[in-house]
Length: 206
Ligand code: HEM
Image (cartoon, rainbow, N blue to C red):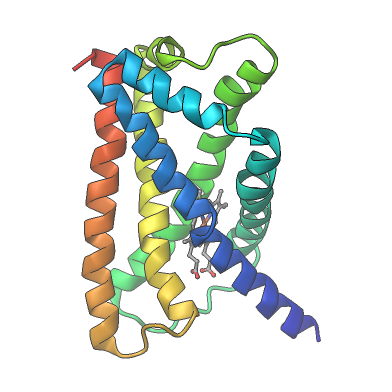
């Protein structure tokens, strides 16, 4: 019975990592990328997202609660669950370890990022506009903190798609797992580029 419950929790953990958290991550980075087309474009895109009806209800059910569940069970998996990884070979074992390491980095990053943006805006201490991110990212320490946080989040998502496909039985043969490996490397490179390019824009205006 307890095993059955744990199985269901792990399935839910896996699903939430892709829908809605992964979908939100990609959407968030794409909307922020409007910064590259200028201050006004970013303010318009961010303003549109913030102006969606029932935005707090949407945020709570699509972002906060799923991330909270995924993060709490994720920390439990990282620190207490036995690594029952099958013998996938050198590369996959490293990906397995990096999945856990990036999960912890992403947790710290998200907590800090939400604190200095969404919570400060909610408290009325900051406005949601281009200069908010510009002020944060012109500090070189914060710039590198954001680079590490964003690249870790994208890695965690892209590599997570690979293990998601295994978890849900979508890829069973070694050949299909290899194809998905290449696809997820491509996803990692494209989305990382979108995220990093935006950070460079805010920091250096280039
Ligand atoms: C941007 C936020 C995040 C996204 C998009 C995300 C996405 C994913 C995805 C798609 C998976 C693969 C699911 C599977 O293996 O079936 C996954 C696995 C995992 N995530 Fe996250 N995640 C995020 C944040 C976190 C956080 C904050 C933690 C906390 C430590 C975490 C810990 C884990 C762990 C430990 C696994 C591996 C689970 C396993 O091997 O069974 N994740 N994540």
